[in-house]
Length: 210
Image (cartoon, rainbow, N blue to C red; front, side, top):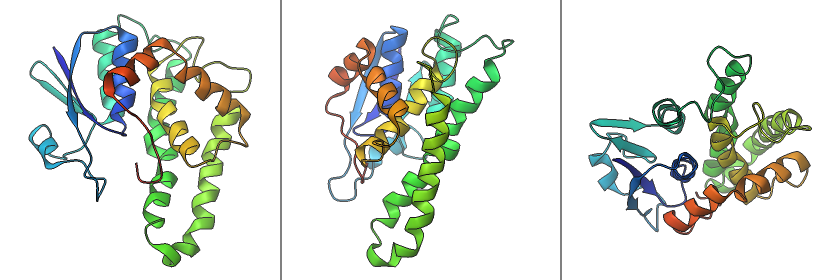
């Protein structure tokens, strides 16, 4: 049985969504952020040394990091769904988008999160932070022109990974100039599996401290 170690308002929401898309039986171990620090509770360190979420356990296996978990679930339980065939033209694009989400796109949002806590001391950083946000969001906006998904004609693990990035951007009011991304995000959030994930995981609201 798969267990998702689920932290509120975190990247583990994307794993919950994928589990629902896959139609798997799974358990949820719920963790709440500290109300003052917004950090994960120390109990998560008993699951994985980093003490972060998402983490899944599947029998004797423990898998951490969103991209690795998505790759594992799709390979192990996807039965050929949610990723292109490894020998297809789309597979390289799929791997690119799967890793772009955390390797590039989330970095300026994390910089903005911490810069926001520095007050006036962070003023010199903001032009570069916003420039990088625009760089990545514009790249994604152009990739979605006339497309329903980032890769191929069906939902893949890359879409699950990238949707969290757009939710972070939307929570900070940054999607108004990117109509393709707004359309896409609304479509992802309207999926039945996405809605089931919200119902099962509890309240989900990203913000500048998520």
